[in-house]
Image 1 (cartoon, helix red, strand yellow):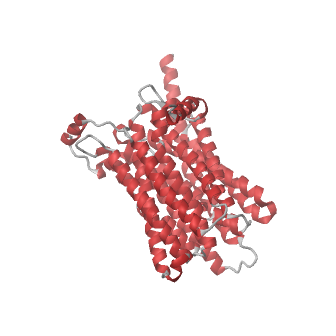
Image 2 (cartoon, one colour):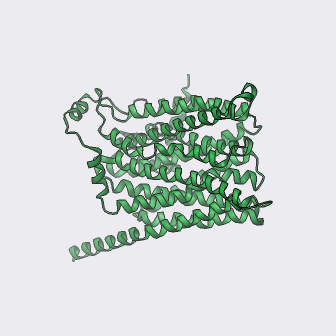
Image 3 (cartoon, one colour):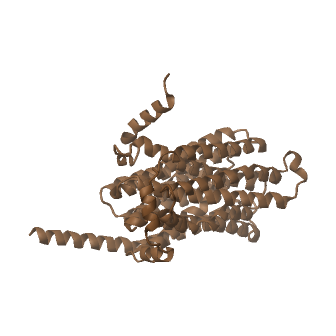
Length: 474
C-alpha cells in the first residue's frame, strides 16, 4: 500500500529547496525532511499564539465583555516566564542525563505545560460566558482559571520554542545555525497562517460551545505534533553523558557575563526590546479594533492574524536574501522598524474614512516590518554568541523579545481602558486604539535611533577589514 505520509514528506522535501526560504541548510546527514519534522514544534507555538493573542482576546473583549485591561494582563501573564528563557536555554546547554539527552527533556516538559493550559481553558471560558450550567458560577472562578490556563500555555510555549531552536542549531554546522533558525521561524509563520485560516473557518458560526471544541482540539494536536517533532531528533550518547558529568560546572552568572562582554550585545538587546515593544502593543488590540471600529466579524478578525503572519513571512524572506548576501543585520532591523511607521499610519487612517483596505494594508506592512526586524536581530544575536552557548544566546534574544511583547500587550490594554475612562469618546471608538498606535510609532523611532550606532560601527569595521585586505594584496 502507498505510504501517504512518506509520499507527502518526500514531495514537500523536494519542493522545499526551490520555494522554502533557508531550505538550503539541509544536508545528507540532516535532510530537509528531518528539519521539517522538527519544525512541527514551531507549528504548535504558532497555533497557541493565534488562539490566545488572536481569537481569544477578541472574544473575551467583545463577545464576553471582559475589560480590556484584564484581558491584556492575562495575555501578559506569560511575561513572568519570559526572563527565564535565558536560564532555560543555558540549562539545556549544560543538562546532564544518563542517556546524554540535553534538549528533549525540556521540550517534553514544555509540551505538558501547553496541554495543561489548553485543558483548563475551556472550563474557564464556560464560566466567563455563563454558558449552560456555568450561569451561576462566580466570575472570579472564571477569571482565575483563565489566568492559570494562559500562564501554563505561555510557560510551555517559552520552554518548547527556546529549547527547540537550540536543538535545531545542534543538528547543523555552526555557519548554518542562523539559516536553520530562520527556517524554524518560517515554519512558525506558516503555522500561524494555517492555524488562523482553520480557526477562522471553524468559528465562522461562532458559539461558546464551538470555541471550546476548537481549544480542546488544539490541546490534542499540540501533543501529537510535538511528539512527532521530537521523535529520534536527539541521539542518545552515553559518551557525551559521561563527558558532561565529568566536566567542570559552569555557573549561569559566569556564562551571562561572558555573553554580555560581546561587543554591542547590550545595545542589541535594548534595540530588540524597543522594537518588539513597538510592534507588540498592537497584538491585543488589532482584532478588537477591527471588530469595534470597522465592524468586522469574529471570523474576519481571526483571519487578520493570517495576513499579519504573511507579511512577517515576507519580511523574513527579504531579510534572508539580504543577509545571505552579506548585509548588515542592523541595517535590516532599521528598515523593518521604518516600515512599521507608515503601517501604523495606515491603520489610524482607516478609522478616518480610508476604511478596511487601508486597515488591511497597514496590518500587512506592520507584519512585513516586524519580520525584517525580528530576523535581523535574531541573526545578530546568533552571530554574537559564543560557540558553546547558542542556547543561552537564543534564550537571551527570546527573553527580551517575549518580555517586551508581554509588556507591550499589558500596556496597550491599560492605555486603551484609561483613554476610554478619561476621554468622552462618544461616537469615536477609534480614539483609544489610535492613541496606542501613536505610542507604538514612538517606540519604533527610538529603536531606529538606538540601532543607528550599531550600523555605523558595523560599517566602520567592514571598511577597516576591506582596507586591511587591500594593504595585504598590495
